[in-house]
Every structure is written in C-alpha cells, then in structure tokens.
Image (cartoon, rainbow, N blue to C red; front, side, top):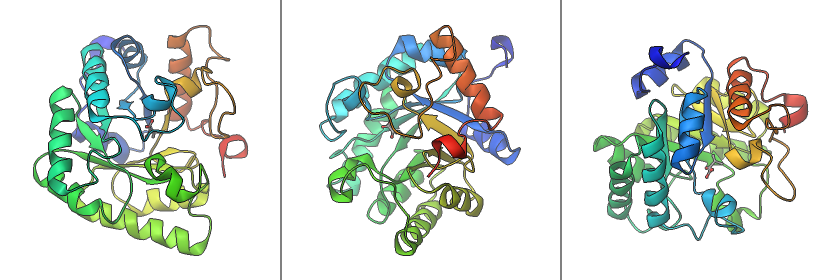
Length: 270
Ligand code: KIV
C-alpha cells in the first residue's frame, strides 16, 4: 500500500487482516532510522526485541538486557515510525518478581511509545497477562523457544518435538488466549505444531522457525540483512543477498511473507 493510503496500524486492523487471511509481516527494529525504512517498506509490526542484547550489544544471550535499555530503544523506534504497530519486549527480570513489577515495567514501555508488550513463557505469566489486559495494555505472548529461559531449556533447541512437550505448548497457549493476549509469537517448533496452534487459537500467531502455517512471520532484522556473524539459524533467509538496498530487502521480505513463499518448509522448517 502506498504512503498516502496508509493509516496507522491498530489492533482492530491487525485482527481484520488476520480474519481476511492476510499474512502479517513483522521485523525486529531498534532505532529511529531503521524504523523509518521498515515502516516505509510496508512492515506491519515492529518488534523492539530483547534480541538487541545480542545483535546490538554483542552479548551471548538476552538475559543482561535491562528495562532501561528497552525503554531507550522503544523511544528511538517510536520516533522513526509512522504507521507500523510497535511491540516491545519485557526483558528478563522486569516481570519475574511479581504481577505488580510486571505492570510497572509494561507501563514504562507503553509510555516510551509501545502499542503492545511481549512476555515470554506460559503458566506463571498468565496472571500478569490477564492483569495487563484488564488495565488496557495489549499483550503478545511468546511460546516455544523462549530465549530468556535458554539455560533452563538446555540451549537453542527446537521445542515441542515430543507428545508431552507439544501437549504443554497447547495448554500454555490456550491459557494465554483465555487471559486475553491479543497475539503470540511461536519460536522454533515443528511446522505441524505451529500450524495446529495457529488454527486452534483465535488471535494471530506470528512464527519464527515455526513453519508457514502461522498468521505471520517475524525475523531478527540483522539476520535477514545478513549482518549476523557466525552460524545463522536454519529458519533465517538472507533477503539482503537478493536485494540491492536495505529498503529493497525489506520490501522483498514483506512480499514473501504476504504471498506465503517465506518460510519455505523445505529450507526453513523443522
Ligand atoms: O527478541 C526478539 O527479537 C524476539 C524475536 C526473536 C521474536 O523475541
């Protein structure tokens, strides 16, 4: 859609797009310059992911990222953005102590310019998700490989492979849905399970390494631009290798998510 026709994204419109079967394109974003480029290239949702700890700060996990870091980068993204829906991660330790702590942290992210906050994990996060929704703060869940629990999960592994683990993900996703979360990210799980959850739940589920059956896709910006050093996950596609500029690479990503050609289960699936 060209700029003059575009309207700022709302939860209502995201739901309508999902109901109409339009795939949602999300990318991580951490500053105002990239926010402008991604927004103008047609990305529907910008995620200020705590992955910034790894791709901006050079750390080996997301655990050291602070709430102040997230507030700062959310402010930067909000200044560069015009139309996209902004989701900000609650970082490790900013919602683990109590529901009250999680509410205070979410308020800071919303005041920094987020439209929605994302929290990782199921079970213990459900009361917080419900309390946020009750207070008018839209919530995105995050299940599967949850990087803030990487040490408990034994590394960056595909989740939900066996029956018990898959059953647990089904239950956790249902509980988060009942708590009122408006969206969920599914990370690193078999494509069949990603598709099953997306079919079973009413809200849009955004996949990363969860196959083509979800309502939308998200990638870490630096991964899809080929800026990540070392080994890159199987679910990543380097769109920069196919485009002549960052804006072109992002437009290709949006087009590939919308027409369903990314992810390709043969290349990017589990
Ligand atoms: O922090 C992040 O970038 C994320 C995505 C990988 C979904 O949570």
